[in-house]
Amino acid sequence: MSKNNHSEIKNLHPEDVLMSRIYLFRDQKVMLDRDLAELYGVETKALNQAVKRNIARFPPDFMFELTQEEYSSLRSQTVTLKKKGGHSKYLANVFTEQGVAMLSSVLKSPQAIQVNIQIMRVFTKLRQFLTDNSRIQYELTEMRLAIEKLSKKQNGHDQNIELLFEYIDRLQDKEEKTVTNPNSKGEIGFKVGIK
Image 1 (cartoon, one colour):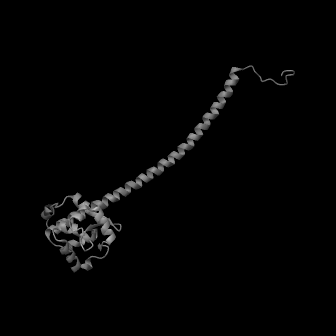
Image 2: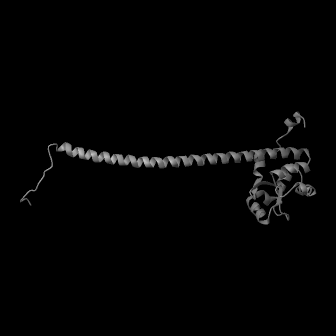
Image 3: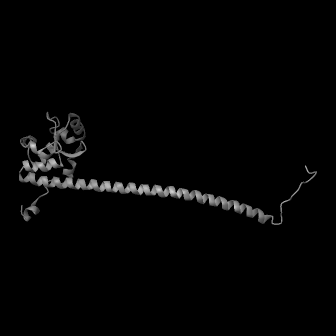
């Protein structure tokens, strides 16, 4: 591809559309076969046939079939599945990021190549977002721990300050008693006959 062809790559689908078609199953970000087929401009059946002809390129960490339970969960969350193909007799195949990249080697139409480039960019942005988010979470946790440590330290200081004020109050009370009756020396002895 020449330099001019790089600038000619069109954004066939908005990023938010692509992002909305990425799901989380088995702790992996995946895309449905029917969503990919629609984005590539081919039938779902044609996409799955191309995959079957090249199945060696799609190990389980690149592509897997949803279980009935996973598929039911997906159907309950997704309105579009209820409209078209929601009651398919086949369970959906899903493709991980690596599986989507591998699809470009079996679907060679110009649209498939352009869409694949877009999808790879979205996956990269998503991964970067998650990385940034975990870094922020780590920093927030560190800040929270530092604040708790300072708070405990401050509580100790507060207790010491309260104790100091208590001692100062006692000293002031003693001083006031002495100031109000400076000649009083405190009587010593007994008083007889006073009841």
